[in-house]
Image (cartoon, rainbow, N blue to C red; front, side):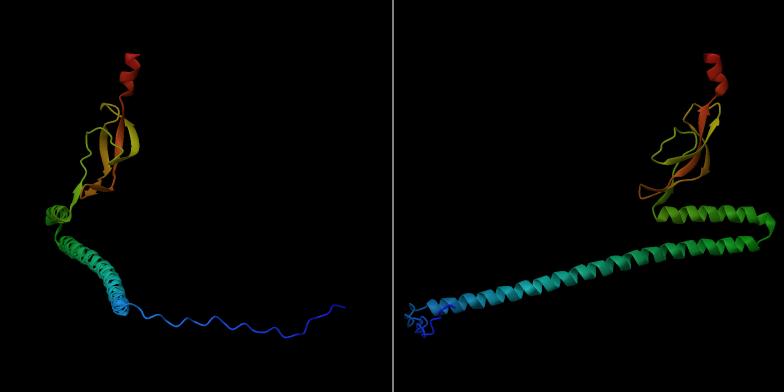
Amino acid sequence: MEDHDTTPVPETPAAEPETSVPSPPGQNDELAGQKKRYAELNDRYLRLAADFDNYRKRIARDHETQVQLANERFAVDILEIADNLDRALKADEDHLRTGVDQIRQLLAGVLARHGITPIDAQKISFDPGVHEAVAHIPSDEKEGTVIDVVSPGYRMHNKVIRYAKVAVSKGNPSNEETSV
């Protein structure tokens, strides 16, 4: 068995704080001033952070509103065309072609007002940046030339939003045989 020493150990008194030495005059005032300045700057920082957060939220809301308004204006313009199509369908057949042609011109104007323009594709060299080849057809045209537009392509503010679906010439097969 082990012997345990049960004699009480005298407690050493905790280090008592030294009596404060009087600080030089103005040091407490300076510390209080710095604490006050810190509190003011911290408050200003928190307010600016909150203001910036509110600004970001407001900008996001404004952007969403602008997009909705732009879509609404476009929809109103398209509805005008839909109304004219309904009128053309109710007209007698003699005026139907004329009415539909006028509606097509109106549609082209609305699209142009919104920055949407057709891509010129007929009789030019195939460009994969604006064309989508849906057929390769033998023809008298030079190989790689667009010979037919199946579906027109469109740009919106210089960005292709729909590629023109085109038929591309393979060249004239009879010319290839005679040149060999």
